[in-house]
Image (cartoon, rainbow, N blue to C red):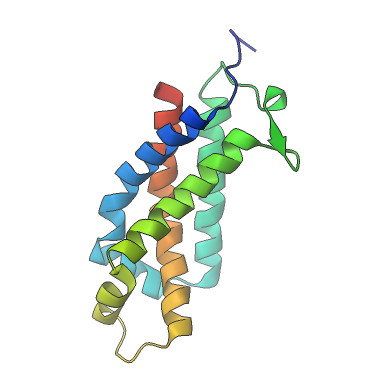
Length: 146
């Protein structure tokens, strides 16, 4: 480990939130993202979730020599900073999507109404997986830079 490892604090989560919301916003309200979500299969949503995990971990611990995941506080063996990052990435997308009523507004552009609640939730989860790819980049960058 190069340098000293800074302890994870509430200020780090606040920085992640700012970065996560900043990059998630434009993707949540983009019709193309919702069109992609409608066309995605379940395995593609799982693949994007794996990408979010890999990008998040890489940005926190591989791109920053000052962080050592083995020296950080853990939750169930997973570094708390990483848990926070992933939660922020997905929750920022979910909060924005629901705040803007994006599912009800944008899904009908791609699916013939009426859309069942089950289908709307499923499509929204897939759209969240797309938005989280970008949100995690913003959240990790903000955590690393500030």
